[in-house]
Image (tube, rainbow, N blue to C red; front, side, top):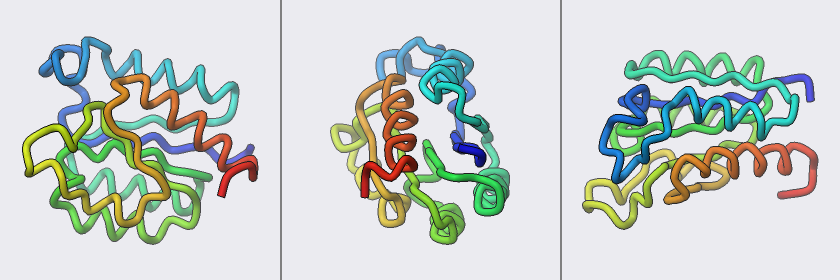
Length: 147
């Protein structure tokens, strides 16, 4: 694989490890990044986080031109950002929407994702290990072994 997998993280995920550890665990974002690098097994990976919606959109645009796949934990942008959803609609490759918690077991405001409508797959509720599953799944999809 020559084009990188983009792993994009939305608002407040820079606070992993300290933010509501009973929901999000004590694993830090730096530890999640290391887990993704290991799961990529040498395949190129771009790992980013922003609290700014426009940066997420710019990185999706970058992935359109330079990436093979997107794994995105849009965080709060999941539920209200038509702009993030619209940018993802332009991406020609596989997209996995990822959530650390099971959003469907949480308050009703977390039940309606705009991103799910454009994602190839959704992973929720596996904790930080969901990132490993997402990277492995994307690699599988890119190898032509999955639809």
